[in-house]
Image (cartoon, rainbow, N blue to C red; front, side):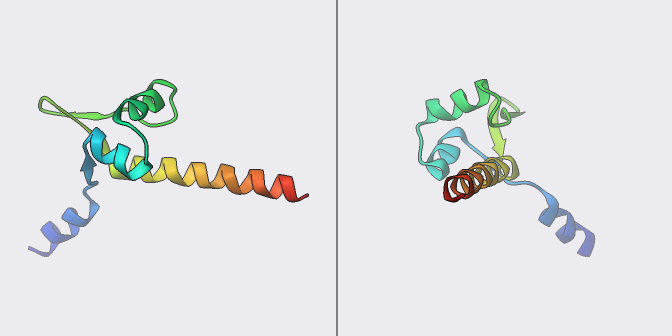
Length: 77
């Protein structure tokens, strides 16, 4: 029983394109543009559905924030 609970914690949440768009504050089409440009990992297929791993969306946001911080540091110097 304990191992089942631990495994559930390791399972990545899968998000619909609409959910990703809402988290990023962009349109659903923009999500797929980010995928086409290679900025965001493409969705995985779950049956006939496409879903985005939440960890990949979070990694994208972290990359954006790091790039922003680097730009701000460069501007200040």
